[in-house]
Length: 133
Image (cartoon, rainbow, N blue to C red):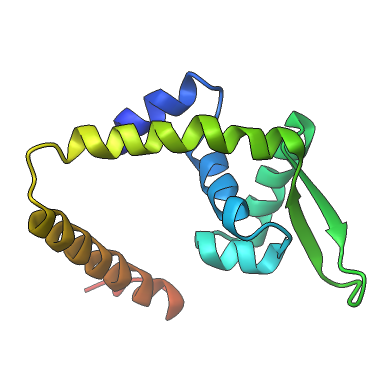
């Protein structure tokens, strides 16, 4: 699914990482950069570089929080907002194609199992890494 979606995004010159940022901002425009990092499970340097490229592209902008100058907030530009109507249907089409023939119960089970697997992988990262044994 990820490979298929990546091919769809590439047609619009969007990377999977950029998609992730845009998807967060479509629902949380003006989020603090540190919160964005946490939601994406990325380090600060990765998000900073990603945002700089997206700012040059003209889809996001960063501003200091007016009440706390230590906080950088990330906002969509008009161009970034317009991408939602183009890219969300691409994601929906990829999901629909991958899940054709699945019952609603099977889709719910798949999402539950994948969510649990993802959560399992996040725990070691939050504790400083994976065990070596």
